[in-house]
Length: 137
Image (cartoon, helix red, strand yellow):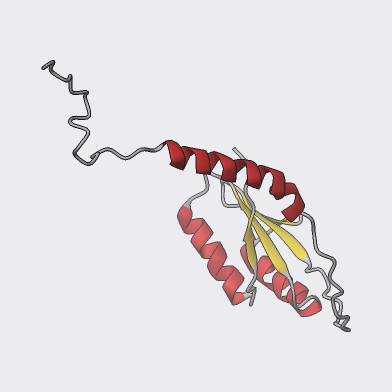
């Protein structure tokens, strides 16, 4: 009687120990095609009639540009100022525009101590909104 060659998967009477991924790949490809076809249809915006309400118009905040130079000099909107005069000027501007925002630009070589003192001065002038001006690299 001739011998039967056994393949790499072993005897055919034993259960297979490897997973057949071909049906899984087929299902995934079918789902991919379905989603490619349906994606543009789902991206359309729905028409919604939103309710109307009367709301007060929010005024844009007043921005004051404050610059701290490397040598410690201060400029408010391009004009050089001393620290005490700056505090009074900021208080006056805050009284005129309660939503005052101070945009603070600091020279990269300025000392941290001077920046900390300037932030303390802004706090004393009752400035609550400070924006730090930066530049993209």
